[in-house]
Image (cartoon, rainbow, N blue to C red; front, side, top):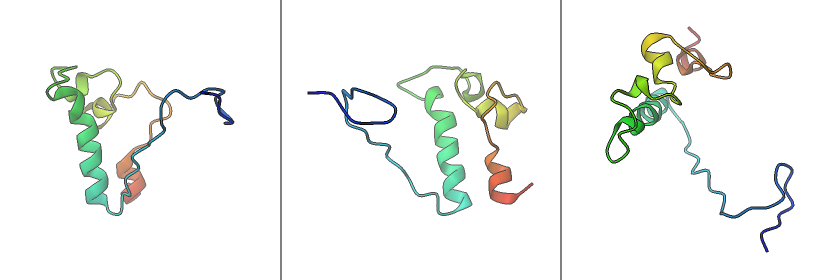
Length: 82
């Protein structure tokens, strides 16, 4: 019943829904990035006392220039080439 024909998995137990959002402007891209950074810090999650202290966030990269993720790309460079 849960078997799927996918390249990266044999079974799927939940519906895939990426909730993709078209980032049609720099303003929208930064708005979504700020949401991602602040969400773990917000209620009801309260996963960190500050957004940059959440281990799995890129907030520390943008706030302090620190990155533990080799795959991280800087949105500012992507948008503005700087």
